[in-house]
Amino acid sequence: MSPDNRQRLRTPQGTESFFLEEAYRHRQLLRMTEDHFASWGYLPVLTPVFDYYETYRPLLDRSQVERSYRFPDREGELLMLRSDITLFLAKQMGLSLKDAPLPRRVYYADSIIRHQEEEDISSDEFFQSGAELIGLKGQEGDLEVLMLLNDLMDAMRLPSWRMHIGSRAILDAVLEGTADPAEVGDLLELRDREGMYRLIGKEKANLLLFLGTPDEFTELSTELVRAIGDSSAVSSVVEAVNDLKSLASELSATVSMEKIRIDLSEHGGQPYYTGFTVRAYVDGANSAIASGGRYDKLLGSFGSPSPAAGFSLMMRKIEPLSGFAADAAEESPVRIAEGNNFTGRYRDATRRRKNGERVAIT
Amino acid sequence: MSKPHTIAIPKGRLLDSVVKYFTARGMDIRFGSRKLSAVDSTGRLEIYKVKNHDLPAYVHHGIAGLGIVGDDTVTESGHSFTRILTLPFGGTRLCVAAPKGSLTPGQLGGTVTVATSYVRMTRDWFHRRGIPVKIIRLGGSVELAPVLGLAPYIVDLVETGSTLAANGLEVVADLGDIKVRLIANPAYFKLHYREIAELADIMMRES
Image (cartoon, rainbow over all chains, first blue to last red; front, top):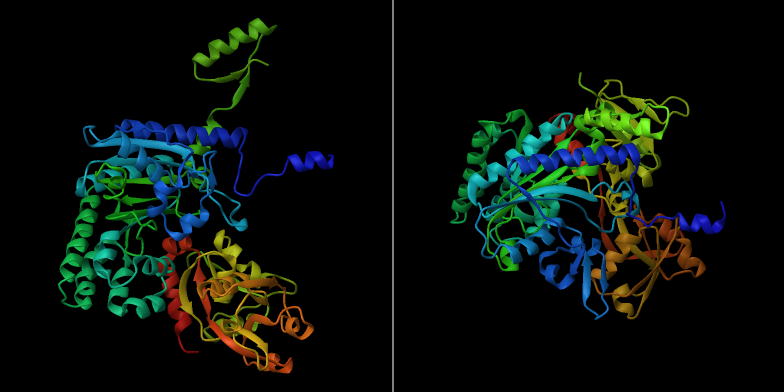
Protein backbone atom coordinates (compact mmCIF):
# COMPACT_ATOMS: atom_id res chain seq x y z
CA MET A 1 0.00 0.00 0.00
CA SER A 2 1.37 3.40 -0.93
CA PRO A 3 2.01 6.01 1.77
CA ASP A 4 -0.77 8.15 0.22
CA ASN A 5 -3.30 5.33 0.62
CA ARG A 6 -2.21 4.71 4.18
CA GLN A 7 -2.83 8.39 4.92
CA ARG A 8 -6.35 8.12 3.48
CA LEU A 9 -7.19 5.15 5.69
CA ARG A 10 -6.48 6.97 8.95
CA THR A 11 -9.59 7.45 11.11
CA PRO A 12 -10.05 10.34 13.53
CA GLN A 13 -10.21 9.47 17.22
CA GLY A 14 -13.76 8.78 18.34
CA THR A 15 -15.21 7.73 15.00
CA GLU A 16 -16.31 4.21 14.15
CA SER A 17 -17.82 2.26 11.30
CA PHE A 18 -19.41 -1.12 11.43
CA PHE A 19 -20.20 -3.43 8.58
CA LEU A 20 -22.07 -6.47 7.34
CA GLU A 21 -23.14 -8.93 10.06
CA GLU A 22 -22.33 -6.47 12.84
CA ALA A 23 -24.33 -3.72 11.16
CA TYR A 24 -27.16 -6.17 10.47
CA ARG A 25 -27.29 -7.12 14.15
CA HIS A 26 -27.30 -3.42 15.03
CA ARG A 27 -30.20 -2.71 12.69
CA GLN A 28 -32.21 -5.71 13.87
CA LEU A 29 -31.90 -4.69 17.49
CA LEU A 30 -32.70 -1.11 16.64
CA ARG A 31 -35.79 -2.18 14.73
CA MET A 32 -36.96 -4.22 17.71
CA THR A 33 -36.49 -1.30 20.13
CA GLU A 34 -38.30 1.07 17.76
CA ASP A 35 -41.19 -1.38 17.41
CA HIS A 36 -41.24 -1.66 21.17
CA PHE A 37 -41.38 2.10 21.67
CA ALA A 38 -44.08 2.40 19.03
CA SER A 39 -46.17 -0.32 20.70
CA TRP A 40 -46.17 1.80 23.87
CA GLY A 41 -47.52 4.77 21.90
CA TYR A 42 -44.23 6.61 21.36
CA LEU A 43 -43.54 8.51 18.12
CA PRO A 44 -40.13 9.07 16.52
CA VAL A 45 -38.22 12.35 16.62
CA LEU A 46 -35.04 13.40 14.86
CA THR A 47 -32.75 16.06 16.30
CA PRO A 48 -30.27 18.25 14.39
CA VAL A 49 -26.64 17.21 14.23
CA PHE A 50 -25.47 20.65 15.42
CA ASP A 51 -26.98 23.67 17.10
CA TYR A 52 -25.95 26.95 18.70
CA TYR A 53 -23.56 26.36 21.58
CA GLU A 54 -24.91 29.31 23.59
CA THR A 55 -28.33 27.63 23.72
CA TYR A 56 -26.94 24.78 25.78
CA ARG A 57 -24.01 26.41 27.57
CA PRO A 58 -25.91 27.10 30.85
CA LEU A 59 -27.04 23.47 30.96
CA LEU A 60 -23.62 21.87 30.49
CA ASP A 61 -21.26 20.98 33.28
CA ARG A 62 -17.50 21.31 32.91
CA SER A 63 -16.88 17.80 31.60
CA GLN A 64 -19.66 18.15 29.03
CA VAL A 65 -18.12 21.39 27.80
CA GLU A 66 -14.71 19.77 27.59
CA ARG A 67 -16.06 16.80 25.63
CA SER A 68 -18.17 18.76 23.15
CA TYR A 69 -17.00 19.66 19.66
CA ARG A 70 -17.55 23.34 18.88
CA PHE A 71 -16.86 25.39 15.77
CA PRO A 72 -17.84 28.78 14.29
CA ASP A 73 -20.25 28.99 11.37
CA ARG A 74 -19.71 31.37 8.45
CA GLU A 75 -21.26 34.27 10.37
CA GLY A 76 -19.06 33.62 13.39
CA GLU A 77 -21.76 32.02 15.57
CA LEU A 78 -20.41 29.22 17.73
CA LEU A 79 -22.02 25.86 16.99
CA MET A 80 -21.88 22.58 18.90
CA LEU A 81 -22.19 19.05 17.56
CA ARG A 82 -24.89 16.88 19.16
CA SER A 83 -23.19 15.50 22.29
CA ASP A 84 -26.33 14.74 24.33
CA ILE A 85 -29.56 13.78 22.61
CA THR A 86 -31.72 14.64 25.65
CA LEU A 87 -30.54 18.25 25.56
CA PHE A 88 -31.05 18.66 21.82
CA LEU A 89 -34.40 16.93 22.08
CA ALA A 90 -35.49 19.20 24.94
CA LYS A 91 -35.02 22.24 22.73
CA GLN A 92 -36.93 20.68 19.83
CA MET A 93 -39.75 19.68 22.16
CA GLY A 94 -39.73 23.09 23.81
CA LEU A 95 -40.23 24.65 20.38
CA SER A 96 -42.82 22.24 19.08
CA LEU A 97 -44.91 21.37 22.12
CA LYS A 98 -45.91 24.84 23.32
CA ASP A 99 -49.58 24.38 22.52
CA ALA A 100 -49.64 20.63 21.98
CA PRO A 101 -51.83 18.36 24.11
CA LEU A 102 -49.88 16.52 26.77
CA PRO A 103 -48.57 14.00 27.56
CA ARG A 104 -46.48 13.33 24.45
CA ARG A 105 -44.37 10.26 24.01
CA VAL A 106 -41.32 10.35 21.77
CA TYR A 107 -38.39 8.10 20.94
CA TYR A 108 -35.14 8.53 19.07
CA ALA A 109 -32.26 6.50 17.73
CA ASP A 110 -29.24 8.52 16.75
CA SER A 111 -25.52 9.02 17.07
CA ILE A 112 -23.84 11.49 19.38
CA ILE A 113 -20.50 13.12 18.76
CA ARG A 114 -18.19 13.96 21.61
CA HIS A 115 -14.52 13.82 22.35
CA GLN A 116 -13.18 10.75 24.11
CA GLU A 117 -9.79 10.08 25.59
CA GLU A 118 -7.50 7.92 23.52
CA GLU A 119 -8.10 4.87 25.71
CA ASP A 120 -11.83 5.07 25.11
CA ILE A 121 -11.54 4.09 21.49
CA SER A 122 -14.17 1.42 22.14
CA SER A 123 -16.46 4.42 21.49
CA ASP A 124 -19.45 2.44 22.53
CA GLU A 125 -21.57 5.32 23.73
CA PHE A 126 -21.85 6.87 20.32
CA PHE A 127 -25.15 5.40 19.26
CA GLN A 128 -28.07 5.96 21.56
CA SER A 129 -31.70 5.00 21.40
CA GLY A 130 -34.16 6.21 23.97
CA ALA A 131 -37.57 7.44 24.95
CA GLU A 132 -38.94 10.56 26.60
CA LEU A 133 -42.32 10.94 28.26
CA ILE A 134 -43.26 14.61 28.26
CA GLY A 135 -46.01 16.21 30.28
CA LEU A 136 -46.76 13.44 32.76
CA LYS A 137 -45.43 14.28 36.19
CA GLY A 138 -45.19 12.25 39.36
CA GLN A 139 -45.12 8.56 40.01
CA GLU A 140 -47.36 7.59 37.10
CA GLY A 141 -44.79 8.96 34.67
CA ASP A 142 -41.84 7.52 36.61
CA LEU A 143 -43.41 4.06 36.56
CA GLU A 144 -44.14 4.18 32.84
CA VAL A 145 -40.54 5.06 32.02
CA LEU A 146 -39.09 2.42 34.34
CA MET A 147 -41.47 -0.27 33.11
CA LEU A 148 -40.71 0.60 29.50
CA LEU A 149 -37.01 0.20 30.24
CA ASN A 150 -37.61 -3.02 32.16
CA ASP A 151 -39.66 -4.55 29.35
CA LEU A 152 -37.05 -3.59 26.77
CA MET A 153 -34.24 -5.14 28.78
CA ASP A 154 -36.24 -8.37 28.97
CA ALA A 155 -36.98 -8.27 25.25
CA MET A 156 -33.29 -7.80 24.45
CA ARG A 157 -32.56 -10.96 26.47
CA LEU A 158 -29.53 -9.60 28.30
CA PRO A 159 -27.51 -11.74 30.72
CA SER A 160 -27.99 -10.99 34.42
CA TRP A 161 -28.86 -7.32 34.40
CA ARG A 162 -29.92 -4.91 37.10
CA MET A 163 -31.58 -1.52 37.36
CA HIS A 164 -30.12 0.84 39.96
CA ILE A 165 -32.67 3.45 40.90
CA GLY A 166 -31.60 6.63 42.67
CA SER A 167 -33.03 10.03 43.35
CA ARG A 168 -31.72 13.45 42.50
CA ALA A 169 -34.48 14.84 44.71
CA ILE A 170 -32.96 13.12 47.76
CA LEU A 171 -29.50 14.47 46.92
CA ASP A 172 -30.82 18.03 46.59
CA ALA A 173 -32.89 17.76 49.77
CA VAL A 174 -29.95 16.39 51.77
CA LEU A 175 -27.58 19.09 50.58
CA GLU A 176 -30.13 21.91 50.84
CA GLY A 177 -27.63 24.46 49.53
CA THR A 178 -24.95 23.48 52.07
CA ALA A 179 -22.55 22.02 49.53
CA ASP A 180 -21.95 22.16 45.81
CA PRO A 181 -24.04 19.35 44.25
CA ALA A 182 -21.48 18.94 41.46
CA GLU A 183 -18.65 18.43 43.94
CA VAL A 184 -20.69 15.99 46.02
CA GLY A 185 -21.85 14.31 42.80
CA ASP A 186 -18.25 13.69 41.75
CA LEU A 187 -17.50 11.98 45.08
CA LEU A 188 -20.74 9.97 44.89
CA GLU A 189 -19.76 8.68 41.45
CA LEU A 190 -16.55 7.38 43.04
CA ARG A 191 -18.42 6.24 46.16
CA ASP A 192 -15.57 7.93 48.02
CA ARG A 193 -16.75 7.46 51.59
CA GLU A 194 -13.78 9.26 53.17
CA GLY A 195 -14.17 12.24 50.87
CA MET A 196 -17.93 12.37 51.49
CA TYR A 197 -17.46 12.25 55.25
CA ARG A 198 -15.07 15.20 55.04
CA LEU A 199 -17.30 17.23 52.72
CA ILE A 200 -20.81 16.75 54.13
CA GLY A 201 -20.42 14.71 57.31
CA LYS A 202 -20.82 11.05 58.11
CA GLU A 203 -24.60 10.96 58.55
CA LYS A 204 -25.53 12.61 55.26
CA ALA A 205 -22.85 10.62 53.46
CA ASN A 206 -24.17 7.31 54.85
CA LEU A 207 -27.64 8.08 53.49
CA LEU A 208 -26.39 9.16 50.06
CA LEU A 209 -24.16 6.08 49.80
CA PHE A 210 -27.04 3.68 50.46
CA LEU A 211 -27.08 0.73 48.06
CA GLY A 212 -29.33 -2.26 48.62
CA THR A 213 -32.56 -3.99 47.80
CA PRO A 214 -35.87 -2.11 48.02
CA ASP A 215 -36.67 -4.10 51.18
CA GLU A 216 -33.39 -3.04 52.75
CA PHE A 217 -34.12 0.57 51.81
CA THR A 218 -37.52 0.38 53.48
CA GLU A 219 -35.95 -1.16 56.56
CA LEU A 220 -32.95 1.16 56.90
CA SER A 221 -33.90 4.51 55.39
CA THR A 222 -35.88 5.77 58.40
CA GLU A 223 -32.86 5.31 60.66
CA LEU A 224 -30.49 6.83 58.08
CA VAL A 225 -32.71 9.91 57.73
CA ARG A 226 -33.15 10.24 61.50
CA ALA A 227 -29.36 10.27 61.90
CA ILE A 228 -29.13 13.42 59.79
CA GLY A 229 -30.84 15.41 62.53
CA ASP A 230 -34.03 17.30 63.05
CA SER A 231 -33.50 20.45 61.01
CA SER A 232 -36.42 21.77 58.99
CA ALA A 233 -34.71 20.48 55.85
CA VAL A 234 -35.16 16.88 56.99
CA SER A 235 -38.85 17.02 56.14
CA SER A 236 -37.98 17.45 52.46
CA VAL A 237 -35.55 14.53 52.75
CA VAL A 238 -38.30 12.40 54.32
CA GLU A 239 -40.66 13.36 51.51
CA ALA A 240 -38.12 12.48 48.81
CA VAL A 241 -37.26 9.18 50.54
CA ASN A 242 -40.94 8.28 50.84
CA ASP A 243 -41.45 9.05 47.16
CA LEU A 244 -38.69 6.61 46.28
CA LYS A 245 -40.03 3.94 48.63
CA SER A 246 -43.46 4.30 47.08
CA LEU A 247 -42.00 4.05 43.57
CA ALA A 248 -40.13 0.86 44.48
CA SER A 249 -43.26 -0.57 46.08
CA GLU A 250 -45.34 0.06 42.94
CA LEU A 251 -42.60 -1.43 40.77
CA SER A 252 -42.54 -4.58 42.87
CA ALA A 253 -46.07 -5.36 41.72
CA THR A 254 -44.79 -6.09 38.21
CA VAL A 255 -40.99 -6.36 38.22
CA SER A 256 -38.81 -8.99 39.87
CA MET A 257 -37.20 -7.17 42.77
CA GLU A 258 -34.07 -9.25 42.15
CA LYS A 259 -33.45 -6.89 39.26
CA ILE A 260 -33.94 -3.69 41.23
CA ARG A 261 -31.52 -1.97 43.57
CA ILE A 262 -32.04 1.31 45.37
CA ASP A 263 -28.79 3.17 44.91
CA LEU A 264 -28.69 6.74 46.17
CA SER A 265 -25.22 7.28 44.71
CA GLU A 266 -26.94 7.27 41.31
CA HIS A 267 -27.72 10.97 40.93
CA GLY A 268 -27.95 10.99 37.16
CA GLY A 269 -24.61 12.58 36.34
CA GLN A 270 -26.21 15.46 34.45
CA PRO A 271 -27.16 18.66 36.27
CA TYR A 272 -30.65 18.76 34.76
CA TYR A 273 -32.12 15.80 36.68
CA THR A 274 -34.74 16.62 39.33
CA GLY A 275 -36.42 13.36 40.41
CA PHE A 276 -35.75 9.65 40.12
CA THR A 277 -32.65 8.48 38.27
CA VAL A 278 -31.86 5.10 36.79
CA ARG A 279 -28.90 3.24 35.36
CA ALA A 280 -28.88 -0.32 34.11
CA TYR A 281 -25.91 -2.65 34.35
CA VAL A 282 -25.30 -5.98 32.73
CA ASP A 283 -22.68 -8.66 33.13
CA GLY A 284 -20.07 -8.17 30.42
CA ALA A 285 -20.45 -4.42 29.89
CA ASN A 286 -17.79 -2.15 31.36
CA SER A 287 -20.22 0.65 32.19
CA ALA A 288 -23.95 1.35 32.39
CA ILE A 289 -25.90 0.30 29.30
CA ALA A 290 -28.83 2.62 30.03
CA SER A 291 -29.30 5.78 32.00
CA GLY A 292 -32.08 8.25 32.57
CA GLY A 293 -34.41 9.83 35.04
CA ARG A 294 -36.79 12.71 35.59
CA TYR A 295 -35.93 16.28 34.56
CA ASP A 296 -38.94 18.48 35.17
CA LYS A 297 -37.22 21.83 34.58
CA LEU A 298 -35.21 21.13 31.45
CA LEU A 299 -37.94 21.83 28.89
CA GLY A 300 -38.73 25.06 30.71
CA SER A 301 -35.28 26.28 29.66
CA PHE A 302 -36.61 26.14 26.11
CA GLY A 303 -39.96 27.82 26.67
CA SER A 304 -42.16 24.82 27.40
CA PRO A 305 -42.28 24.20 31.16
CA SER A 306 -43.43 20.60 30.99
CA PRO A 307 -42.29 17.80 33.27
CA ALA A 308 -40.39 15.03 31.51
CA ALA A 309 -38.70 11.71 32.14
CA GLY A 310 -36.88 9.25 29.95
CA PHE A 311 -33.83 7.13 29.33
CA SER A 312 -31.12 6.41 26.80
CA LEU A 313 -29.79 3.01 25.81
CA MET A 314 -26.13 2.63 24.79
CA MET A 315 -26.86 0.44 21.81
CA ARG A 316 -23.26 -0.42 20.92
CA LYS A 317 -22.70 -1.81 24.40
CA ILE A 318 -25.90 -3.83 24.28
CA GLU A 319 -25.52 -5.41 20.85
CA PRO A 320 -22.78 -7.96 21.63
CA LEU A 321 -24.58 -9.05 24.81
CA SER A 322 -28.15 -9.27 23.54
CA GLY A 323 -29.56 -12.75 22.97
CA PHE A 324 -32.18 -11.23 20.70
CA ALA A 325 -29.53 -9.61 18.49
CA ALA A 326 -27.49 -12.83 18.33
CA ASP A 327 -30.49 -14.92 17.33
CA ALA A 328 -31.68 -12.35 14.82
CA ALA A 329 -28.33 -12.51 13.03
CA GLU A 330 -28.14 -16.31 13.14
CA GLU A 331 -31.70 -17.23 12.28
CA SER A 332 -31.72 -15.41 9.03
CA PRO A 333 -28.82 -16.48 6.80
CA VAL A 334 -28.67 -15.24 3.20
CA ARG A 335 -29.49 -18.03 0.66
CA ILE A 336 -28.64 -18.07 -3.02
CA ALA A 337 -31.51 -18.35 -5.50
CA GLU A 338 -31.77 -21.33 -7.81
CA GLY A 339 -32.43 -21.28 -11.55
CA ASN A 340 -30.79 -21.72 -14.94
CA ASN A 341 -30.51 -18.05 -15.75
CA PHE A 342 -30.96 -14.65 -14.15
CA THR A 343 -34.72 -14.55 -14.76
CA GLY A 344 -35.19 -17.97 -13.21
CA ARG A 345 -33.13 -17.09 -10.17
CA TYR A 346 -34.95 -13.75 -9.85
CA ARG A 347 -38.32 -15.55 -9.83
CA ASP A 348 -37.09 -18.14 -7.32
CA ALA A 349 -35.77 -15.40 -5.06
CA THR A 350 -39.02 -13.42 -5.27
CA ARG A 351 -41.07 -16.48 -4.36
CA ARG A 352 -38.85 -17.42 -1.41
CA ARG A 353 -38.65 -13.87 -0.08
CA LYS A 354 -42.42 -13.91 0.27
CA ASN A 355 -41.89 -16.79 2.72
CA GLY A 356 -39.56 -14.67 4.81
CA GLU A 357 -36.26 -15.97 3.46
CA ARG A 358 -33.36 -13.65 2.70
CA VAL A 359 -32.29 -14.52 -0.83
CA ALA A 360 -29.56 -13.14 -3.09
CA ILE A 361 -29.95 -13.67 -6.83
CA THR A 362 -26.36 -14.73 -7.50
CA MET B 1 -17.57 -20.55 46.02
CA SER B 2 -18.69 -18.01 43.42
CA LYS B 3 -16.42 -16.91 40.59
CA PRO B 4 -13.20 -15.29 41.81
CA HIS B 5 -12.83 -11.52 41.57
CA THR B 6 -10.52 -10.44 38.80
CA ILE B 7 -8.00 -7.98 40.19
CA ALA B 8 -5.08 -6.15 38.57
CA ILE B 9 -2.07 -5.42 40.75
CA PRO B 10 0.87 -3.26 39.72
CA LYS B 11 4.41 -4.39 39.01
CA GLY B 12 7.01 -2.11 40.47
CA ARG B 13 7.29 -0.41 43.82
CA LEU B 14 3.91 -1.59 45.16
CA LEU B 15 4.03 -5.25 44.14
CA ASP B 16 5.80 -6.67 47.21
CA SER B 17 3.61 -4.67 49.59
CA VAL B 18 0.42 -5.82 47.85
CA VAL B 19 1.42 -9.50 47.89
CA LYS B 20 2.48 -9.31 51.57
CA TYR B 21 -0.78 -7.56 52.46
CA PHE B 22 -2.93 -10.28 50.91
CA THR B 23 -0.75 -13.07 52.29
CA ALA B 24 -1.09 -11.65 55.81
CA ARG B 25 -4.87 -11.97 55.44
CA GLY B 26 -4.80 -15.58 54.34
CA MET B 27 -4.77 -14.99 50.59
CA ASP B 28 -1.42 -16.33 49.51
CA ILE B 29 -0.33 -15.23 46.03
CA ARG B 30 2.37 -17.01 44.08
CA PHE B 31 3.16 -16.24 40.46
CA GLY B 32 4.81 -19.05 38.52
CA SER B 33 8.03 -18.36 36.68
CA ARG B 34 7.38 -15.59 34.12
CA LYS B 35 3.64 -15.92 34.76
CA LEU B 36 1.62 -12.72 34.89
CA SER B 37 -1.53 -14.21 36.36
CA ALA B 38 -2.30 -16.34 39.40
CA VAL B 39 -5.15 -17.44 41.64
CA ASP B 40 -4.76 -16.87 45.36
CA SER B 41 -4.70 -19.76 47.84
CA THR B 42 -8.36 -19.28 48.81
CA GLY B 43 -9.60 -19.13 45.22
CA ARG B 44 -11.15 -15.75 45.95
CA LEU B 45 -8.97 -13.72 43.59
CA GLU B 46 -7.76 -14.13 40.03
CA ILE B 47 -4.79 -11.78 39.90
CA TYR B 48 -3.21 -10.09 36.89
CA LYS B 49 0.20 -8.50 37.27
CA VAL B 50 0.28 -5.48 34.94
CA LYS B 51 2.39 -2.39 34.43
CA ASN B 52 1.36 0.33 36.84
CA HIS B 53 0.66 2.78 34.03
CA ASP B 54 -1.57 0.24 32.23
CA LEU B 55 -3.60 -0.81 35.25
CA PRO B 56 -6.39 1.80 34.85
CA ALA B 57 -6.97 0.67 31.26
CA TYR B 58 -7.49 -2.96 32.36
CA VAL B 59 -9.99 -1.95 35.03
CA HIS B 60 -11.72 0.68 32.86
CA HIS B 61 -12.37 -1.86 30.13
CA GLY B 62 -13.58 -4.42 32.66
CA ILE B 63 -10.82 -6.95 31.99
CA ALA B 64 -10.11 -6.77 35.70
CA GLY B 65 -13.05 -5.87 37.92
CA LEU B 66 -10.79 -4.61 40.69
CA GLY B 67 -7.38 -3.00 40.91
CA ILE B 68 -4.83 -1.76 43.40
CA VAL B 69 -3.28 1.48 42.34
CA GLY B 70 -2.16 4.92 43.49
CA ASP B 71 -4.22 8.07 43.03
CA ASP B 72 -1.50 9.49 40.78
CA THR B 73 -1.89 6.69 38.21
CA VAL B 74 -5.68 6.94 38.24
CA THR B 75 -5.71 10.73 37.85
CA GLU B 76 -3.19 10.65 35.03
CA SER B 77 -5.26 7.99 33.23
CA GLY B 78 -8.30 10.29 33.08
CA HIS B 79 -10.62 7.45 34.15
CA SER B 80 -12.87 7.30 37.20
CA PHE B 81 -13.29 4.25 39.41
CA THR B 82 -15.25 3.26 42.47
CA ARG B 83 -13.08 3.71 45.57
CA ILE B 84 -13.44 0.67 47.79
CA LEU B 85 -10.64 1.02 50.35
CA THR B 86 -7.62 3.11 51.14
CA LEU B 87 -4.72 0.77 51.86
CA PRO B 88 -2.27 1.42 54.68
CA PHE B 89 0.88 1.29 52.57
CA GLY B 90 2.49 2.98 49.59
CA GLY B 91 1.18 6.44 50.44
CA THR B 92 3.31 9.31 49.28
CA ARG B 93 3.12 13.02 48.36
CA LEU B 94 3.20 14.81 45.04
CA CYS B 95 5.39 17.88 45.31
CA VAL B 96 6.95 20.72 43.37
CA ALA B 97 10.70 20.65 43.94
CA ALA B 98 13.51 22.95 42.86
CA PRO B 99 17.18 23.63 43.67
CA LYS B 100 17.64 24.63 47.30
CA GLY B 101 16.85 28.29 47.94
CA SER B 102 14.49 28.64 44.91
CA LEU B 103 11.34 30.78 45.08
CA THR B 104 8.00 29.00 45.12
CA PRO B 105 6.24 28.97 41.71
CA GLY B 106 3.74 31.55 42.96
CA GLN B 107 6.51 33.96 43.98
CA LEU B 108 8.38 33.61 40.72
CA GLY B 109 6.08 35.57 38.38
CA GLY B 110 5.79 34.76 34.67
CA THR B 111 5.65 31.30 33.17
CA VAL B 112 7.06 28.45 35.23
CA THR B 113 8.78 25.61 33.40
CA VAL B 114 8.21 22.24 35.04
CA ALA B 115 9.52 18.79 34.15
CA THR B 116 7.29 15.92 35.27
CA SER B 117 5.76 12.54 34.55
CA TYR B 118 2.48 13.76 36.08
CA VAL B 119 1.30 16.10 33.36
CA ARG B 120 -2.41 16.20 34.14
CA MET B 121 -2.06 16.79 37.88
CA THR B 122 0.67 19.39 37.32
CA ARG B 123 -1.39 21.28 34.74
CA ASP B 124 -4.49 21.23 36.96
CA TRP B 125 -2.59 22.44 40.04
CA PHE B 126 -0.94 25.36 38.24
CA HIS B 127 -4.13 26.30 36.37
CA ARG B 128 -6.19 26.32 39.57
CA ARG B 129 -3.74 28.82 41.00
CA GLY B 130 -3.58 30.95 37.87
CA ILE B 131 0.15 30.36 37.45
CA PRO B 132 1.20 30.09 33.78
CA VAL B 133 3.07 26.83 33.29
CA LYS B 134 5.09 25.17 30.56
CA ILE B 135 5.25 21.41 31.12
CA ILE B 136 8.01 19.14 29.82
CA ARG B 137 6.91 15.51 29.97
CA LEU B 138 9.55 13.05 31.17
CA GLY B 139 9.30 9.29 31.70
CA GLY B 140 11.28 9.19 34.95
CA SER B 141 14.39 10.39 36.81
CA VAL B 142 12.96 13.88 36.72
CA GLU B 143 15.40 15.04 39.44
CA LEU B 144 17.95 15.33 36.67
CA ALA B 145 15.99 18.07 34.90
CA PRO B 146 17.00 20.97 37.21
CA VAL B 147 20.50 19.57 37.62
CA LEU B 148 21.10 19.52 33.85
CA GLY B 149 19.21 22.74 33.15
CA LEU B 150 16.17 21.29 31.34
CA ALA B 151 13.67 22.89 33.75
CA PRO B 152 14.10 24.79 37.02
CA TYR B 153 11.16 22.99 38.68
CA ILE B 154 9.96 19.42 38.80
CA VAL B 155 6.77 17.78 40.01
CA ASP B 156 7.32 14.30 41.38
CA LEU B 157 6.35 11.82 44.08
CA VAL B 158 8.28 12.34 47.31
CA GLU B 159 8.52 9.62 49.95
CA THR B 160 11.50 10.44 52.14
CA GLY B 161 13.01 13.33 50.17
CA SER B 162 16.43 11.65 50.12
CA THR B 163 16.61 11.49 46.30
CA LEU B 164 15.77 15.18 46.11
CA ALA B 165 18.41 16.03 48.70
CA ALA B 166 21.01 13.91 46.92
CA ASN B 167 20.46 16.05 43.82
CA GLY B 168 20.48 19.38 45.64
CA LEU B 169 16.70 19.82 45.45
CA GLU B 170 14.03 20.57 48.03
CA VAL B 171 10.25 20.65 48.16
CA VAL B 172 8.85 24.13 47.48
CA ALA B 173 5.13 23.26 47.28
CA ASP B 174 2.90 20.33 48.11
CA LEU B 175 0.31 19.22 45.53
CA GLY B 176 -1.32 16.71 47.86
CA ASP B 177 -1.25 13.23 49.35
CA ILE B 178 -1.21 10.22 47.06
CA LYS B 179 -2.94 7.19 48.47
CA VAL B 180 -2.97 3.58 47.33
CA ARG B 181 -6.48 2.22 46.97
CA LEU B 182 -8.49 -0.81 46.11
CA ILE B 183 -10.60 0.40 43.18
CA ALA B 184 -13.35 -1.19 41.11
CA ASN B 185 -14.75 -0.76 37.66
CA PRO B 186 -18.02 1.06 38.48
CA ALA B 187 -20.22 -1.38 36.55
CA TYR B 188 -18.46 -4.38 38.07
CA PHE B 189 -18.99 -2.86 41.51
CA LYS B 190 -22.71 -2.36 40.90
CA LEU B 191 -23.20 -6.01 39.97
CA HIS B 192 -20.94 -7.46 42.69
CA TYR B 193 -21.14 -4.97 45.54
CA ARG B 194 -21.98 -7.55 48.19
CA GLU B 195 -19.07 -9.83 47.35
CA ILE B 196 -16.75 -6.82 47.10
CA ALA B 197 -17.88 -5.67 50.55
CA GLU B 198 -16.98 -9.13 51.92
CA LEU B 199 -13.53 -8.89 50.34
CA ALA B 200 -13.10 -5.37 51.75
CA ASP B 201 -13.99 -6.65 55.22
CA ILE B 202 -11.27 -9.29 54.98
CA MET B 203 -8.79 -6.74 53.70
CA MET B 204 -9.52 -4.36 56.56
CA ARG B 205 -8.77 -7.02 59.16
CA GLU B 206 -5.62 -6.62 61.16
CA SER B 207 -3.04 -9.17 60.04
